[in-house]
Amino acid sequence: MQAINYKYVVLLTAVFFSAPANAVTGSNEWTEEIKLQFINIASAGIGDYQLCEMHSNNENKKNFVERVFQKGVAKGMKNIRWKEMNLREEAAKSGLHLGVVVIQYTTVEDAKNVIAKVDTNLSNYLAKSLILTQYIALRRDDKVAFIYSETFIDDKIKGGFK
Image: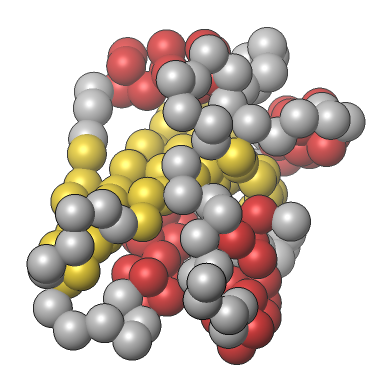
C-alpha cells in the first residue's frame, strides 16, 4: 500500500481546487486552468504519459448536467464548457480521470443559488452514473465549475474532494 503524499493533498486543495469568488475568468480559461493543474498533479513523479480528452456538443453537455447534478442546475445557464480527461503513464493499463463542467449563468445570483443547492446536498456523487463518481462545485462570479472524478480515491487527487 502506498503512503499518502501530503504534498499533493495540500497542493490540490490550495491550487487545483481553489477558486476565488471575485476572479474574472471566462469559462474556457477556467476549464483550461483546471485541466493544466490536473495534468501537473497527475503526471508528477511519472515518466512518459498519455492524456486523452473527450468532447461533446453543447446539447449533450446540457443533457449531462440535467441528468447527473441536482434539478435546477441548468436553470439560468448562459453557456457551458465541458471537458473530460484520462491521464495514464505510458505503460499503465489505467490512469486518473477528471471531468470539468463550467457553467456560466445569466447572473451572479443564479450562480450563488446553484452553489447553495449543491452545498445542501448530502451526497456529492453523480446521479445515474454507472461508476461511483464524486464531485465538488466551486464558484467564480457568474460561473460554477463542477469537478468530478471516477478515480477520486487515488492519493494524488483525493484531497481535493473533501
